[in-house]
Length: 308
Length: 310
Image (cartoon, rainbow over all chains, first blue to last red; front, top):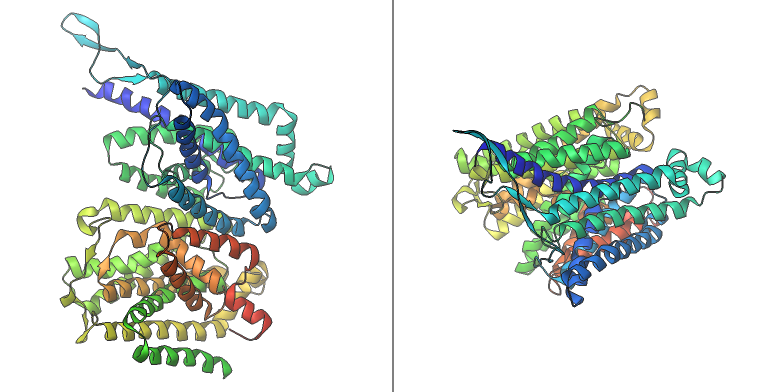
């Protein structure tokens, strides 16, 4: 293959990464924005989504699409409920102190990870996609008889990957609508802006916190369900999404949703492209260094407003 | 006086144990003492100055790889390799301090985490030099320090005790000195310390370099005493461990890191006989500690029994 088709392929793969990453990172960003809690266990909610998807898909008989559709609904609900329980039993009792909650969520990370290891085992297991047609893509080339359309070998994608991108866009629009257009979103934004004042106006801040933590975890779980037909479910799969979401949330500006989505697209695409042409490890080194330096020199994020 | 009696007494007890412990626990205790030195370095920053770092594995690994690569690729003998390890730790800590101390609170935690992660990935990326995940073994012939064979179990225990004793006494002296008092004041109220005319940044910088160097000393000694250098020691897990040990033993107490390390080591040692998911214990311990005993074991002792415990 020449460079052109190669680049298109890398961009397509990067777009899938970006879609899943945006969902995970928006969850992390919501939790940080509203609750000021840095949730280190966020990647484990992603992993739980994927593992639950496998568990539901293999226990449902019939067409794979039925099991998958069920997983798409049930897994985020279960993970969300778990997160609400964790919030009420642990985070609430720490008064949402930023430093102590970080330590507690590190503990939560190990608990979730190791319980999954004991229950699910160390194997990576696949889930069959509900539909998976191969779509070849054309390429235009200037040959002997002018411009012509060719079908290079290997250039293509699957209908499922495109569906993932579509689903992520739809879900992100839904989250935006929830935050900007509904009463629930209004209450969340009020809590984010001034916790004390919200409390004074009769907003049940603790219930809002529990809800936000659950919603954030559910979004991560949903991303996990969406990715599992492409990757496989594994008990250690939460580490990479956690790191990448952190990168995205920090570069996008802590707690800013549009910035987070923009950064997810940027990081997802560049991660896809850099990983194709260079070593993935090098891409990660550069990304982590970038995050550290952004936090040091531009703590409001690359897209965040100053003083926000 | 009572204070010195307690700490010197502990060292004397450890020396006495050298002659009576069975081989298995003898080896374990040597390991615990080296790791406790690492935790004490961490405690200087976290317990006394209130700087929560999530990237101390970077310093531990800097010491370990500074020493290990010196032996492996530069053909150094043990003593200069140890010094190279210490210097590597101090330089890395200095650079990270200059960058990370511009931030505070949560941002500081994430910056240290990210740089440590970059360090870990670099160890993997330069696999040709470091042998990546697999790591490398320090040959027995290279583990001779001034004619003493450190791979011998007795010598290893005494060397670990020497390291531990040095770090313990250094910490004890430091936290009771005026410098240490300023550190505690920074932890309690940074603004007021600044207003009183102290240079807060200089104090934080100094303690971070010191803490990193102590971690590097532990890392280099670990490599030298146990003869293995590997990328696991640079991973996030090894940044979390000292936090766990210090929290368990009691942040801001001189003996806390040792008690915490000892306790956790045996907890994991016993539980790994039962299940492979031994990190579960660490997770549960972290959550329970932050919920119910944020002061740790020695912190409780200080609160209930002896208020003057350093």
